[in-house]
Image (cartoon, rainbow, N blue to C red; front, side, top):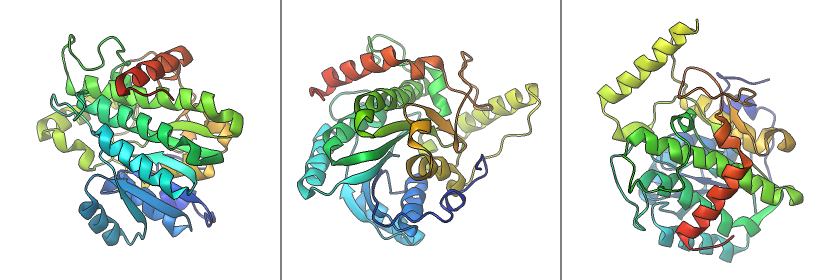
Length: 314
């Protein structure tokens, strides 16, 4: 029914989410704002998490979205734990958790806990938050991890997650973190599907948002040229950005519309589960997921390493 150009309103047409409660991280701009707006517009009670609450309030007000806000800095485990504690203290359950927040292609940086910034923020922050609030997720609930075609840049490196012995590259680190997002969904889904809680990973597509703020214009143009060349080789049309409502559509579809058994433990893009599992390296011009991102042994190993890194067992 839906595809690359579908919007949030397309996939939620006729859907009444009254009585549903949703947590969305990263609601201060872009996809997070649109995801929260669309879900709230269709009746859901939405809780938005953001590092900068003032910025989030302004962005949500401009979008006409009325949601509750909680403070969350994914680059600080102290903040993550405080956020989880606050949510748990309310005792209010969630039907859907959408892990939307993230950073991309940063220069070499560390989180407040000393983790490589992209792996620490995109993966370890969400890993800790979602596991800590797991008891709040209702039986039959859904977890949606925002990954990216960028996962095809790199598998995780569990021997050197913080680039202490390997050369740091901004997109190599991004690839590791986005692969980790898929693997987390695979293992979380395996652990919790017995009570009907399913987890999935989504690639929203190429969208012009603040996510690219660490990239220079030259870097961005070079990436687009590479995609254009690949599309020409394969006989496809020119690369086109998605709009923000189109980019948020797959998150909304996977969380609130798609069949749970269809998406559980899978990788989705353009509002469907991808059927293309490929060993090809990064190619944002075509669909597909790398086999290492869906490998259950890889997912279990990442889980164990993540527990070791954050100092908690789940």
